[in-house]
Length: 237
Image (cartoon, rainbow, N blue to C red):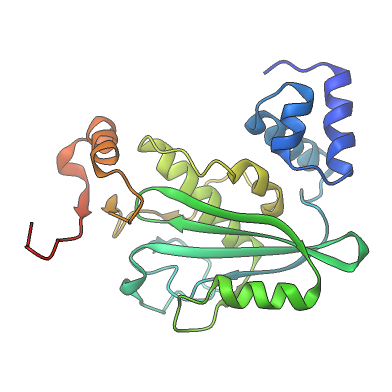
């Protein structure tokens, strides 16, 4: 990646105005991933967190740790909550204070067993009341309440799952680059072993292409090195 001073100045100018990496990339002729990398590097050099504003809070779905191996971090919430019904899907929500007393929030749906970040919400800028409603609906599929979590858990869970999935040949959701700033700066190593009990486990969702996914897994690690689960139709086929 080669950038000149004019491009860099324009990147930081647009970010200061609240533009997302995707829109900045289009304006300056870079890829969204390159813009995100520049913003993270600049934040790290300044010794501050990247993101639109001070951290308001992070929340994770209660069964996020089911089937995972965690090294250290006995203070992380939910380590003893076993919920295999979550099917290896963890929800993460990060909120930061935005200008004009608003809350800027991003949500991530993370397949911690195989595919990494499958969906992204935001960034969305809301007032405090709207944010409470969004948080309730974002975690609405879970029986238990979301868990307040430290930022480092959100970083290890999202960044780590993306790196794990990339090793298997899977890129995160297309909107991921726009949402990374809310997570701040993190470079690993990650203290979570992804995959169910340490082994990739593909559980087919309604919008997944099993032929493509299993082909990628076969190429990356070989057929005997992962598990899979696919729905069975009414006829048993």
